[in-house]
Image 1 (cartoon, one colour):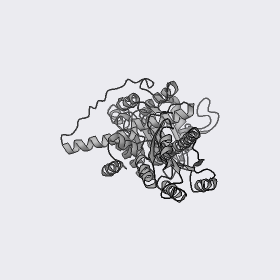
Image 2 (spheres, rainbow, N blue to C red):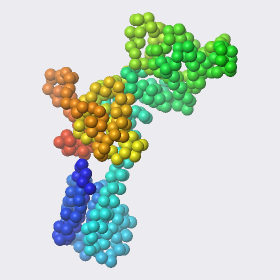
Image 3 (cartoon, rainbow, N blue to C red):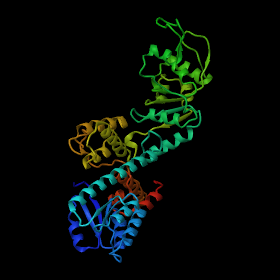
Image 4 (tube, helix red, strand yellow):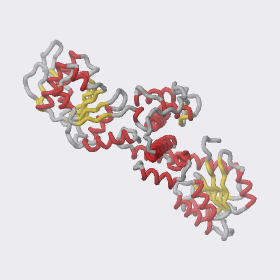
Length: 454
């Protein structure tokens, strides 16, 4: 039952002999013993155990249950998620039932049976850990800056705030970023946060469709417009009426189609191939590319007037290597998803894997990270993914960024980076992150507030 991190079990029992017996009865737990209520509550605050074994007959009322029931109420008030197993005297079932009605997880009647108690504690601990993980995942969902976007870095949070600000408008938006940075997810976020969310998001990849078919795909065609045009077919732009049109890889749009797209953006009407009728379309346009459009303009491959039309608002999405702390947060989210999908027993990353994730350059960005984690989850032989499973060397900790000379700035920069790393390692758990940093929880809360990182 040994685990990577110790699990605390609190035993509140005034019988010295039973204390000694129970102290060594539970494998895989660090057992903390208290002899009366105040001492037990102090231990609860300090160790935050998942399970408490509570004797109802505590001093100064060892022959009754008033002190034990008061302790139960106080425990559940301070830590409602904690599982309390009450231990009662023989033939005292009525008070055991009363304790369960008051919030106790289970009860056990004396004389204590260590083997049976161990089973009860293991079951309670398992339920506690499942509930903690469920709450963590719920908080992760709630704390995502945008639906479908997992990010904690200042660089990405800035992008998310920009998306939130412009989503309610119809401003034509250009998303710039390397392949695999999540441009389509941001296009989806812009659509979902907009008044057009009930309409369709129509996406088309300008680089994935042959040049001779792209015009009819975008603008549609009339019956008989060309060989094989057996019926009138609306284009993608028309299908986006009332919603959002996402033009991915617009840098690959053929030059002859750029003029036609420019006219649509100016007039908001389309003409199908082979047709003469102008069809009005009300759609918000979002474009994306990984290419340098300004260089394309200089080379004569992209129209300057179209560039200014599609870039009324430009959002640059940073590469994964530029997102402080995001790689590890994303990797953990991918691991949880793929482990569930494949029924794999993988629980996390070992030290070598976390070190490699943090220091690899990720040329393929989030898409590469997702692919490597998926493969590692399938191939991992133990409960933890290693750097070898990720097919990454255990990279040395190097940082080529030039630090400022001002000591206060150096300290603040180092503190922020350390906090981001610790929170990533701890999966957002404040207590665990504080332990990794070697500080108290209140100090960490104060630092999070100081740097605006809450």
